[in-house]
Image 1 (cartoon, rainbow, N blue to C red):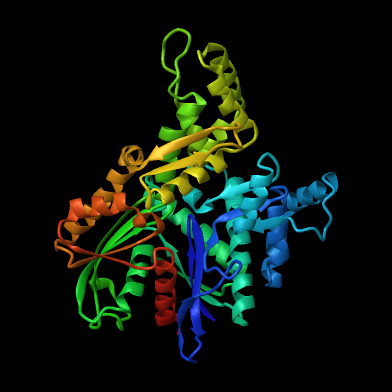
Image 2: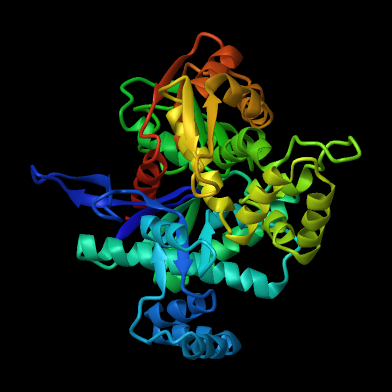
Length: 459
C-alpha cells in the first residue's frame, strides 16, 4: 500500500487512500493514537539501551534483522544487562510513544529516557558514528510504531512511502547535514519495512493538498511553519498543473531554515520563565547573572545545549553562582529543575502558553511542579517581543522566496501549527501587503499532500 509520511518535529501523521462512508476512496489521514490523526513526536524508554532492542525485535525482514543484530551486537548485549540489572521482564513494555510517552515523563521526569522532537537533531554536525546510529534507532523505533498502527487500522501492508523533508534540516553546512538527515530517515524507513522511499519538500507537499481544491490557476506562496523548520515555496498551481508528473517548471523558488515553532517556545520560556529561576538577578558584586546556562536549560532542540546543561562543569558553575548570587531562592529553582530533568516540561508549558495566546491576551502558566504557588503571567505583547528574533527569520524566508521567484503571489497558503498565531498572521500581512491569505489543515496538509504525490509516482 502507498502512503505519505510526515515525520514531523512536533507531530507525526500518515496518509493513505481510504474508503469513506459513501463508498468513495480518497487520500486521508490515518488514526495513530486514540482515534486522533496526529501522534506527538515523543519517545520514552524505561532505559535508553532498550530502544535498540525494540528496533531489533520489530524488523520484519529476516535478512535485514540479522544484519542489524550483527551491527548492534554490543548494544544488544548491554540491553540484556540492563533488563537484568533493573529487573525488567522480557514481557514488560519498554517503549512508549506520543502522549503516552509524555505521561510517563511527567510522572517521573528524573527516570527513564525521554526524547522530544528528534527530527530537530537530524543533520547536526560533530557527532560520533555511534551517536548517529543511536539517532537511527530512535527514528526507526518511532517509524516502526507509526507503520504498525497504520497497518492495523488499514488492514494492509505499507510498502511505498514519500516522506516530507524541510528545505534545510540545519542552518549550517546545509548540504552535508541534509545528506546525513536523509540517510537516517531512509535507513529508518527501510528498517521499519518500507520497500520504496522517496522524499518531497514539505511546503510543496502542503501545496499539493491545497491544489486539489483550486478551480483556477494561481501563483501561490506556500508557507509551512513547522515545529523545527520554516519553509516557503512559490508554485504555479491549479487545474492546468495538478495532473502533471514533472512539476519542476512550476516550482519557481523555495527557501527554508531551521527555525520554527520550537524556537518560539524556547524564546518564550527563556525571556518570560527564566527570570523566575534567576536569569535577570544580580551577583553580590553587582554584576548581572551570566545567562548562557539558563538558555541551555530551555534549548531542548539542541543536543549540544542539553549535553552542556547536564554536564559536570555546568553543575560546578551553578554551585559557584549559588554562592555569588544575591537571590539564592531563584537560582535554587534552576538547580531543582536540572536535578529533576523538568526542562522539557517547562518548554512544553511554553508551547501550551503560545497556543493559549492565540485566543487570549494574557495567559497564566502554573509552575506548581517547581514550587508550590509559583506561576507566571504572560501577555500577548510580551510574547510578541520575545519571539522577534525567530519571527524575523521566518518573514525573511517569505520575502526571499517571492524575490527569487520574480513574481508576486496571487494567494498565500499557510500551514503548520504555529501559523495559527495572530502575531505571525499580522507579520505576514505587513510583509506581503494586500494578498489573500488562506489556511489549510495546519497539522495535516503536509501528510495529505505527501499521499497525493506518493500515488502519482508509485501507482
